[in-house]
Image 1 (cartoon, one colour):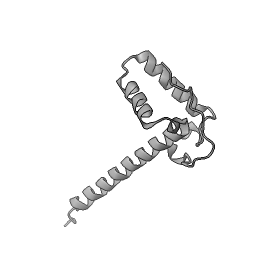
Image 2: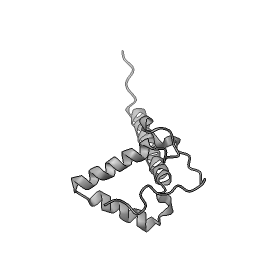
Image 3: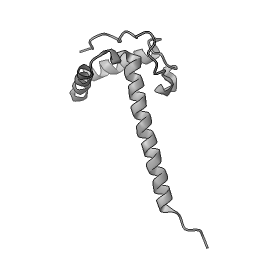
Length: 108
């Protein structure tokens, strides 16, 4: 006879993995903010910029922002590993010399 599956243990393992993924996502977002120099903005400014981009439905603007992001990751502007790795976890979260924000006040 087969041993019955421990669904509770499997569920706990999945919940733990989900918590780890959420934690990693938050950490990577923070590292991205630092790598772009956006940590120099006030919380209100950063939140306002993020709300504006999230609300933007214009494909041309979003495409331009996406291209700019690709250029950022491909350039040497980052303090992290090459963009081909697609992983910001290696970005140092230390406060060395401040990075100038890519593009300053943003792109229309």
